[in-house]
Length: 364
Image (cartoon, rainbow, N blue to C red; front, side, top):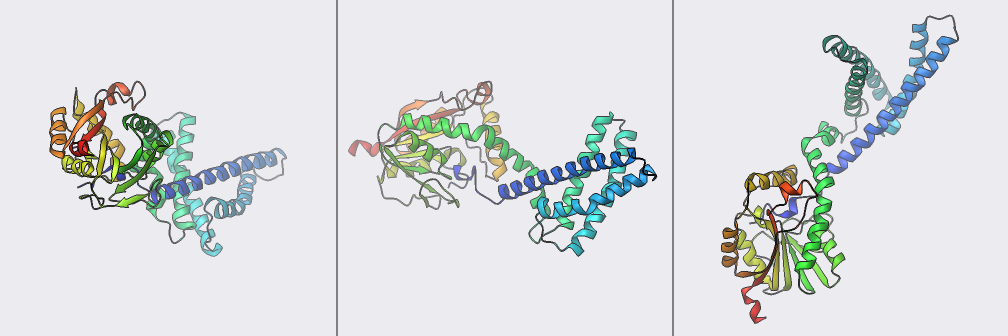
């Protein structure tokens, strides 16, 4: 079965949308708050210098009051784009601001009095904590809409979201480019290609950009809402294609997510007329197992992929190839998936791209 195939490495879901929305709202919230704070400082200090005859604290309080309604309206319309009624939202907004003042006093006492932090550091901490609490309270309560939940607000700050974003930013783009280049070199000639465990087809799309003589379609147990190539669904067992339906089959980082790699590879051999191109891991060298587990965890755990950590040694791969009915034509372990110095730990001989020849190919 292929319950943990490459399809699940980067699934499309609602989480990125929620994260983007919350991030935009928080950015606008901070911008409005900072602008209002600057305006308050300029107005109150100007009026105090004019010697209006009122006590300074009264001038300051009056200036603050002048900003309450405009800032409320800006947050309602721009920060949260809320349709909540004023008779509900404004009292709640006022309560949140009052609680924020109390919390700021408490945070200030802890930062200055208990922790004895430097002035600038303490001020930044108080502002960050108070603003964060205010933002969550305003979005979840004062300006709440029916589809807003605590999970949607906190989505960008969840460990899984952070892990996925970091992996996509640092690893995924380079991985697509490097692997598509190796696949382009490994496939001897043009023809029809099946990408087994294709995911959204990012690698296949990049490969066709390098090899216009290839026509690639995918197969996976999960079809995403948006794919770069045509994808056929299958049950993780028998591929829904006739024998020798494709010239080549690519199997990229799929087999180590399966419990029976040889069985999956046998299906690839059955539908391939000329060859199978495999990219997978090699359990070889110092601390190979822990290193591969770490890479797998970083790349997949954030997407709730089942991780069997089924890495094979050279001998185990040879046995799997024999059981599946194919033989090695070319083998490359110098993939350079990672830039230096990360390559010294994560490349080594832990990855390979191999061109396999089905035993039936001699009769093609």
